[in-house]
Picture 1 (cartoon, helix red, strand yellow):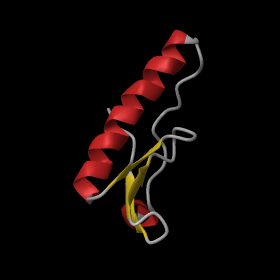
Picture 2 (tube, rainbow, N blue to C red):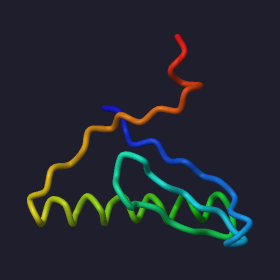
Picture 3 (cartoon, rainbow, N blue to C red):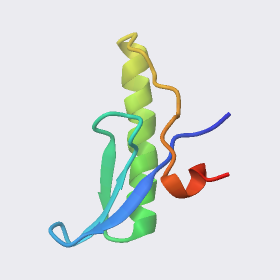
Length: 72
């Protein structure tokens, strides 16, 4: 099973790292380090999925892949 892709990038404006999960609308997190942002995003992902299940909302299939992974 494929898992959701997580983007991690530095935000000058926020002076820290942002991690977002493109397949899960509005699912992102902040951290002072890339590792912290990733850890927080993984917690946010679990909360997002739990909330969707509780509300019987559809859970998207992991689809997003950066272009560098699509070349084959």
